[in-house]
Image (cartoon, rainbow, N blue to C red; front, side, top):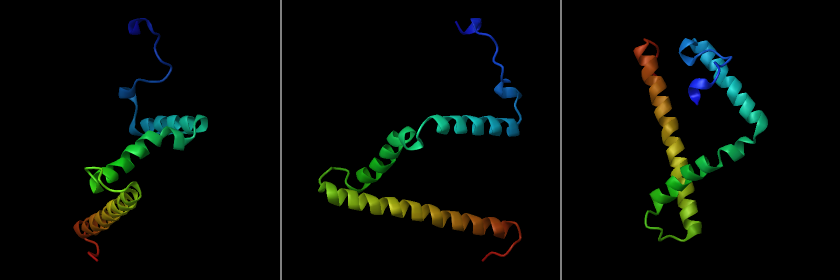
Length: 103
């Protein structure tokens, strides 16, 4: 069935420059967000991400749900703080290797 389809009006992905790929991706994202609420399209992903922290703080499910959520929120904050710290350290290392100020 696929062999019978006509060629797309858009160029083959292999023929696109990085700029054209970026523009096509941006166009697709804008089209998606114009048609749908982004909170709805990411609901399951966000739920899975947050459930990760609940499993981390209470792997056996023994805690009271309120306490589990409180601890999971703290674990989530620690996760993002750890990411921020790693970003600061990476920028500092990059500056040092580029011959800039290491502070």
